[in-house]
Length: 75
Image (spheres, rainbow, N blue to C red):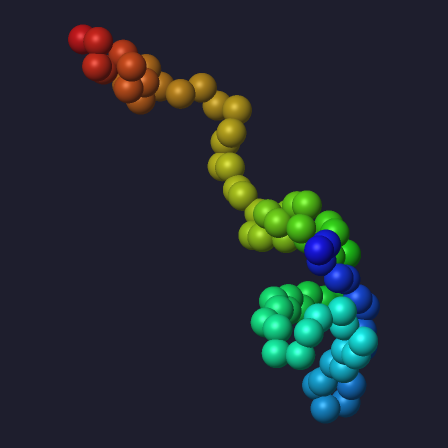
């Protein structure tokens, strides 16, 4: 069965009510809650997009010869 995706508002008591689910009573289901800053589909497709960004100090600078492991091993 494909996942069921719903948009709900949190009430004043911090609750969300979901009714009419196509599952049997007592069946265990997984519940994931995410704010709608990003759509649920986008969160599933690009899970790293919302993580901390990578930072490269000088990504295009050349690497020194002494840092090439392959040259060290062949000597």
